Length: 187
Image (tube, rainbow, N blue to C red):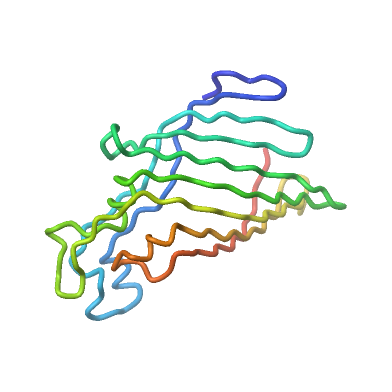
């Protein structure tokens, strides 16, 4: 919801997903694993946050700063701060968006997603209390019209998390690459 909408800046109330939840049983079944480290682990819900976004607009870019609290966790300690800059580079019939961002997740959020609570401890999965985390991200998004109403989108992003994220028994690596392919329909 837009609170302020000026030519060079804006302020919005936002409700968005910051982290994906997961169901350990579904992951185990999908990977067809026996004796998985995730066996018996409690589900983690999606990390949706409610907060404010400040946006600063430039000729070919936008800088945004989110400050949000996760809706399902306790509101006193479960917050995220995310800064992101996206720069538009048009080329012929393509729009390329090059972006970079930095996010800070409070200790409670990180512990909820990758921590091991006492009731989840096993011989292979020791108790683990996670600390706060930082995520750095770069992305490239490309868009081109296919027809008057359809747009093709291609994207790639790479995220790197704080080194102590990998200390969790649930985490094998502290970086993630995501590739996307999609189409948009414009009315």
